[in-house]
Length: 127
Image (tube, helix red, strand yellow):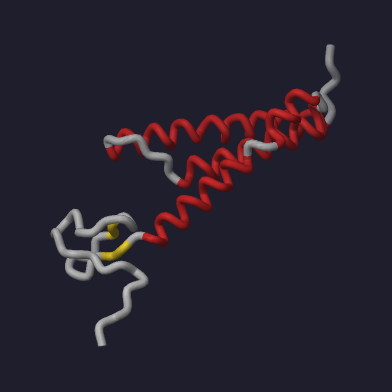
């Protein structure tokens, strides 16, 4: 029978919580996709991915100590963080329609809501 000391219990709680957080990202993504009726990867998906994988990495390094588990959680946070950066830059590049206020994709020429011609962000204001 395995002896369960305080550290064993704490590390098991961290491991289970990490797995719950990591798994919850799929539920969040599914919910948002169903709500919008199109496949969507919300920022919460990437934040939950980072949090869950880092918790599981801590569990692997400090408790499990198995190189396969450590290696499997050592690097995935890199593309998760990169996706957050890309999402942020894309959102910042959106153009706001002067007529209706809708946020339009950076490459849009016309507002999808009202059809107004969109001015590029770096266009000089008329003198």
